[in-house]
Structure formats: C-alpha cells, structure tokens
Length: 217
Image 1 (cartoon, rainbow, N blue to C red):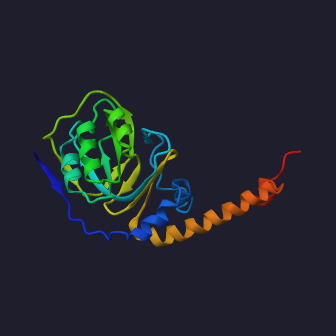
Image 2 (tube, rainbow, N blue to C red):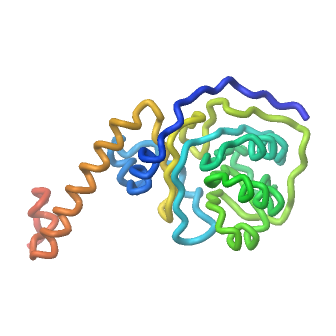
Image 3 (cartoon, helix red, strand yellow):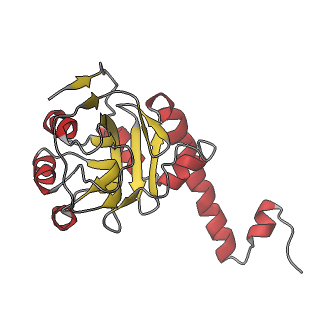
C-alpha cells in the first residue's frame, strides 16, 4: 500500500492540560477564536452526549480507501484523535466495525471523518467517540494511498497533528496547538462571564440590558 508519512514532533499536552480542556465546550473555544475553527455543520457525533477532547493525528486518504487510517490506528497513542480528510464522500464508508475494535483496544480517543462510516451499532455499543459526515453500508478498499500527519483540511478547517480537537453534540472545533494557552485562558474567563450572565437572568435581568441591545416595546 502506498502512503506518505510527514514528519511530526508536536508537544504532547499533559494530563492536567487535557483535563482543563475537557471543561471547555467547542462553542466557547470558537467564540474565543473570533467564531472560527468550526467544522461544517454536517460533521456530527453518531451518538448523543458524545464528548471529544484530545490531540489530532491527521490522515488524508484517497476516496474510498481505509488503508492509511488503519495504519494510523495501529500507530496512534492512547487518547489521540484520528482526524480524516476523506474528501467529504458520503457514499463509501472509510471506517467500520473491525477498525473500531482495534481503536478501542488501543484506547484511541475518538475520530473525526469528513466522509462516511458504517457499522454504527458496533460504534455505539463500544462507546467510541465518532464524528462523521454520513453513514452508509458500502465499505472501502485499501491500497490507493494517502498521507499521515500532514496538514489537512477537514470540513473547512485546517488541522495539523497535535492540534486540540473538541467535540460535542454541537459539532467539532479545532484549536491550533500554538494558541492553546491563549485560547484556554480566554475560554475559562468566558465561562466565568457566562455564569454571571445566567445569575443576572435568574435574578430578573434581561439580555438587552446586559448587552445594551435596544429592547422591544
């Protein structure tokens, strides 16, 4: 099978840093990056209440080819998130039940597929954090090729191995690793402000009052 692997030497976040990120919703992280770094709305979890938080390992694969993804599942470290540019193709799955089994055994943190998956019953039973564009029975081939650990464009967002991937029922946001400290601090401060806003509303305040929005009469 022909695929390329780019050099990658990103800083692995500590357990304490990752724990702090788990408290940050994707929406808040995006708000703190000027509402950017949000994957297209088609990328959603296959099960409700799924939480995704970890550092990316990237794959670009030829249409309908699962080979490079399989190679990365075998090499990725526990907790890492496999992020796949599968061309947005919805009619051929590039991930299925056997891949899920290995990913679970290797304690992979989850996956984001800009394309299709299958065997979703297996995925749901395994509790694997899968976000994708589509679900379809048609399976993949392997041998056409792709790239591992290169810079990818997944559902409209650039992603590099090491970037922080956050997902929940809203969708997926990617935080560039070099902005991690800045965005985390801003997000934590934003959550504190939101707590104050909620307290104000519960005390009888209104959103127009808080944000100087003209009130309807």
